Length: 136
Ligand code: UDP
Ligand code: MG
Image (cartoon, rainbow, N blue to C red; front, side, top):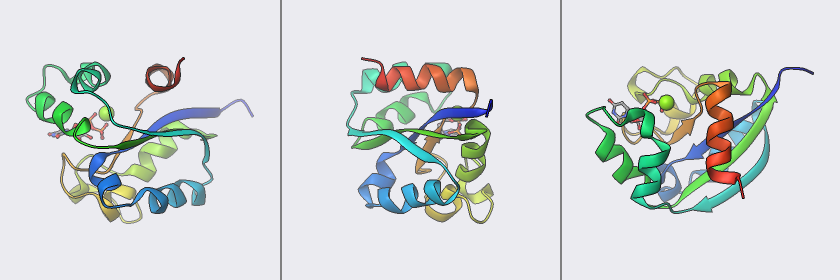
């Protein structure tokens, strides 16, 4: 089908630290996502700064980059029809307090900064973000 999409998902340090990787991966699979690629890595702060460059003018940028580089993360390419939007729906709102029942952030998010998962916000950014981690 024409709208089969791939998007980038990251299980962030707060969730990896709590050993939630498998539970979160199950949530993706239960929603019909295929996990095409995955790798567990720890990135340098300079790489986090590059990844989150779109946010460089935001007040939370420095803390965000420190945080994403603070411990291991699980980076995944996931696929499904309308994967970009579907992933954003499954993740829930940026602030776990605002996230709907049944979303990853509602279930596992600790706070607006430690919100357990990242997901690409557009098809264009999904391609850029997949290349960022998986182009070799
Ligand atoms: N973030 C934060 N404080 C804020 C807003 C965002 O610490 O006030 C962090 C949070 O970890 C979020 C990330 O910055 O996931 C990227 O922000 P964005 O607005 O892109 O949210 P997302 O796309 O992750 O829902
Ligand atoms: Mg975002």
